[in-house]
Structure formats: C-alpha cells, structure tokens
Image (cartoon, rainbow, N blue to C red; front, side, top):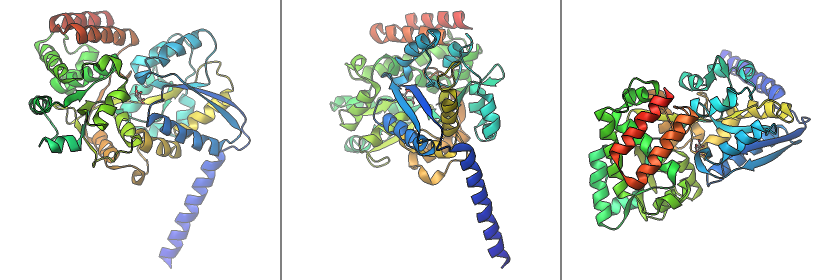
Length: 418
Ligand code: GAL
C-alpha cells in the first residue's frame, strides 16, 4: 500500500513537473520569423539540425524558420558573412558560434551581442552544464551564447574491414600509427584521409596534444609552454611524418569528402572531430561494425573539446522567437533530439543515456573522466587573430614542409597574441 502511494506520488510529481515545463517552454501562439545562420550542410549535420527544427516547430508551430546555411566546415565561410552582417546592422535572429575565445571575442567586444545570462538563471543551466563548458562560455562575468553540444576533436576513425584485411589493430601510439601506415601504404591503401586547410590544422592540433600531453598543450595557450621548445619541435616532426601518409589531393576535399574515402575503403583512417560519426551514420554505416574509433594515437586520457552554441545579437529581428529557440536548444528534449544524430554529446549532464549509441556513451564517459583541453581550430583556445596566424603557418607548411620555418612562425604568432 505504502509502495503504491509512493509510486502514485512520484507519477503525480512527474506530471506536475512536465506540465510546469510545458507551460514555460511551449507556446502554440508564439509568432514571428527566426533566421538561423549556421554551417551545417554536410551529412549528419543537416539531419541533426532538422531534428532541432522539428522539436522547435512542435513547441512553436506558428513561428517560421529560415535556415540560412553557409557551407564550409568549421565555420570557415560563415564567420566572415556573419561579422559583416552584424557590423552592417543586419544581424540574423541567431547564429551558430563556437563556445570560447576564438569566436566570442569578435562578437562581444565590439558590443554587438546581448548577454544571455538571464536564460542560464531562469532555466537553471549552471547546474546542468559541466563546469569546463561554463568556463568556456563565460566572458567578463556573463554568458553570451547557449550550447547545444560538446564535440571531441581528437578522434581517429578507421575502416574496420580494411584494418581486418591487413591484420591491423587500431593504433594507440605514434609508433603503432606509423607501423600501420607503412603496411597500408605498401598495400596501396591511403593510410590517412585528409581534406582542405582547416582539416590539416585540425590534424595538427591533435598531434600537438598527443605529443605534448594535456598540461603542456594547455600551456601553449596561456603562455606556460614555450612554442620554441624542443618538445614542440618533436611534435612538429611527428606532424610532418604523418603528412607522408595522406592523399595527395587533400587540399581539394572538404572534411566529409575526406571522411568518404574511409567509407569507400580508399583510405583506412581519418582524424576528425566526432561530427564524422554523424557523417558515417548518415552514410548508412554502423558504429562498431563498419567503423571503429580510438583517441588520436598518444592522446588517450585527454578530451579535446569544443562546443556549438547560439547567440543573441543586439537588434535581432523578432527577439522573442530567438529567446524561445535558445530555451529549446538548451533543454533536455532539444539536446536529446539533436546530439544522437550529430555525433556529439549533449552539453547537459542529465541527458537520457538510452538514446545514445556505444560511441557517444564512451565519449560521455571519457568527458567525465579525461583531462579536458580546448580545441584551437574550433574556437575554444585562441583569439581569432591568433587562430588566423596559426592556420596560415600550417597551410604554408603543408606545401613547403619546413619544420624550422613552421616553428618560427608559431613562435611569432604566440608572441603577438600573448
Ligand atoms: C565544427 C563544428 C561541428 C561540425 C564541424 C564541421 O567546427 O563545431 O559542429 O559541424 O565544424 O562542419
């Protein structure tokens, strides 16, 4: 009897909880137009965004949504368009922006964004977003955007069939990586699929982490690690050696085209953030069957993190619908609709784990256990000007392969930035 009463009380509590939430979050009468600028055009990304739209239109069926996509992974194309729109006084309702120093600065410092700290307070987000993420999002005491996910950048993906065919195990150290790469190259398989410039820089940052370890890697961004140190030279040499095993046409491929080489078996491995997981699933691949994953060799125990978030520009058209969007993407329902498709883990720690596959569960566990370090290429570690200098230095290096010149450029870039 007592048990029955308790169960009834719990059910009633849940119902009150849900209906209370529904009153706050859902509004069938809300009207307006919401323009969302983002760069999610590739397989996996576009489907995940569509899942967010369907939750939003269920909550607010009378709001029209304009999906303004600007192609270019890592926001390479979107950022420039966005800055010119914001500075030109025609901001969209909201836009995708990385959490952290690389993208918050240009929007906040010139005073073009509204802080959204009020939403964190009203929605209780400081209790459900992890501290490491809150630290990335906070700038001058305020929060400036709402995170929808956490991605991991230091992942090596591999084609299980190709690995089995050549009797290989996934590499966990640089030595194992180079040994496997030799076997594959000799057999006529591209060992490591690579794409356009930003993906080269992505590879580069994961190698820096793997070679230096999490503490010294973090030190690169706060001045504690000297970019001219012999340890950094050693990391650059690993990077240089890795480039011996990539497809020659890398500069011409987008990140998803490079990942596609692994799907068709032309290449065996790809080092990419876990949006590649979303892409592979979109291609009909089954995780753990068709493809496997390990941290980038040498980087086990470290989680190189970044987060996609959305902001509220000053003067946003139909501000009230933007606020409704931001509440939805920060909600459990929104995040649980988006992340299992996107290949990212939710920003919230209270997600419904039953909705996530083996890769994402392992990523959630790693995030809780590993050293969390920021991704530079995806906006979490360095200012935009510093990022620009690093991207330039690495892209020259991909052509001339001169480690001394690269290290000198990196030292100069750090001296300008710090
Ligand atoms: C990252 C972004 C991810 C993914 C990727 C490739 O910068 O955070 O969500 O979309 O670019 O486009």
